[in-house]
Structure formats: structure tokens, C-alpha cells
Amino acid sequence: MGEEQELQAQELIDQAFIGGKWVVLSNCHLSLEYMADLEEILNPRDKEIHENFRLFITCEPHKEFPLGLLQMAIKVTTEPPDGLKAGISRTFNTMINQDFMEKVEPYDKWRSLIFAVCFMHSIVQERRKFGALGFCIAYEFNTSDLEASLGYVDKHLTLAMANNTQYSFRAIQYMIAEVQYGGRITDGIDRELFATYALKWVNEQIFQPNYSFFANSEFNYHIPDALEHMKLLEYIEKIPDNDSPNVFGLHANADLTFRKKKSVAMINTLLDTQPKDAGGGSGKSREEEVKDNVMKDLLPQLPANFDLMDVLDKLKTLKGPRGLGEMGKLDKIPLNNFLL
Image 1 (cartoon, rainbow, N blue to C red):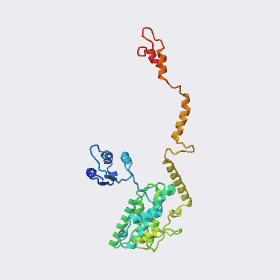
Image 2: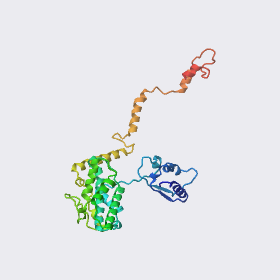
Image 3: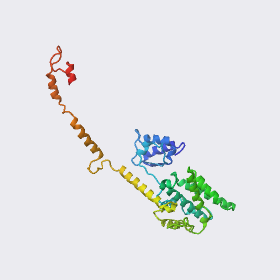
Image 4: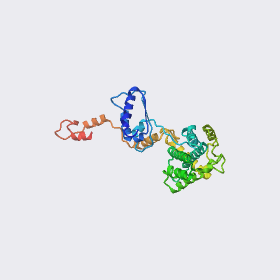
């Protein structure tokens, strides 16, 4: 989707209505006006929709996306994987492959820079879970930041190779920490923290065999000395599932705070999503308890049941004003009609 793509999208949907085809509309956040009309388009009054028709929509989160369309749809979201191991594994199973690792010469240095930047990307993403201890502000670092950083490193190494010049790690550090990721950072302390990561892990030392990211760590987080993609995946599988706060430069209490916060959030979510008729100790729901209390308080205050026949019989025995005819005629005796 995008500029002037609405007409083409409508043609595809009309054809799919008839033939029962599947339609995929990508980047729908670029056509919010058409998305607002889509709810009515998908519920036509003068067209029959084939039972096999399906519509898939991809979209970035947007506050102005039509709520009606969201309520109609089955929603699937993607979130960053939880844990350092999961983050690196996802990167090397989606973005990085053997062809990508053989894209730039010399391959060994390009491979080391790839792993170092991907490792740093996972580290800064995981720091967010510690709240204000990780970053002063929770920034939405994502795959596009990593892709842009690797793209710059690719160009820098290619130009250096073509011009037979040395790599400028100062330029690489600046472009990654200050421009690519730094474009999202608004706090000065967070900017210093990210610049420190880039200074420590994006330098000439990573070209050493089995370069280690941490001097004192239970697990040896290092750059594997291998050029094959499968070898890197095998090493990533050996990374511990549970990350120590020391990996992020934090005290052990930081992990305790994170685990407690996560547990409380999970319990609150479970409570909020429980069925509303789930009973407490009395076996009654909240609505049933309110109903019983109202009945208990109000019913004794009500008068006796109203019997219309008894009232009519009493009205017929009442005398009306002179000259208005027989007794009990409600249509001619306003007082009796009022009493009724």
C-alpha cells in the first residue's frame, strides 16, 4: 500500500470476492483513509463473497488505525524475543545467512563485525526490560536499526577495500551509536551508554581470534572463529537461556526487580482475563452478589402487590359529583379516573 495504490487494491479484492482468492495488503499504515473504508467494503450489500476469500493485512502500530477493522480481524503481532540467546538466534535465522556472510571481503573481518553488531543489538534490546535501570527511556530499537547499521558497515568496508585504505572505527562507531540507533535516543545519559557499547565492542580488537565480550563471565560470550553460518548457529545454541544481570553491567538485584515486576504483570493479566462469572468463596459472581443485596434491601420496602380488579370494584362504589351520571363511570368522573 501507499500513494495511489488504493484502486489496485480494490480491484484485487473485487476479483477475490468472486474467485475465492487470498489477498495480502502490506504496509497498510500508509493508507489509513482506505483502511477506514475497508470495513464497509468487506460487508457489501449487493455482492456475494466466496466462502474461500481471505484478506491479510500487514501494518505497523498506528494510533489512527480504524478500530472497527481491528475488531473484525484476527490479530497477530510480533514482539522481540525474550532473552539474549533468543534475540541473537532470531537475527541469525532471519537476517543473516551464508550469502550475507560472504557479501564483503575480507570475509573474516566482515563476519566479526556482523556478530559484534548483532550481539550489541540484542544487549541493548534486553536492557529495556530492566526499566529505568537499563535505559532512562524505553526506546523502541528494532530490526531496521540493525539493518541500517550493517548496511553502513558493508559500504564502509567495501570502499576501504576498493581504495586500499584503513577502516575508520571512529566513523563506524559514530554512525551506529550516534546516527542509526542514536536517532531514537533523546536522553544524554542513554546516549553516553550506547556510545560506550559501540566503543567497547566495535573496534579493531574484535578481529582477534575468539574475541571475548566480557572479561569476567560464567559463560564465554565470544565471537566464534568460524566462517560457516551453521557453526555460528551451533555456538548460539550453547548460550545460556537465562541471562545474568552481569552481562548487562547490572547488579543481581536488577534481575530480582525485573522478575518481580514481570510476575506481578502476569498475575494481573490473568485476573483481568478471567471469566466474569468466575465465583469467589461463596460460589457467586460479582453481579449475582449485587443482585442479592439489592433484592434484600429493596423488596421489604415495596408496598403490597397492586390488584387492578379490586381497585375497580372500589371505584365503582364511590359517588361522583352531581349531574355526572352513574357511579363508577371512569370516563365521565375525572376524580375517579385520577384515583385509578
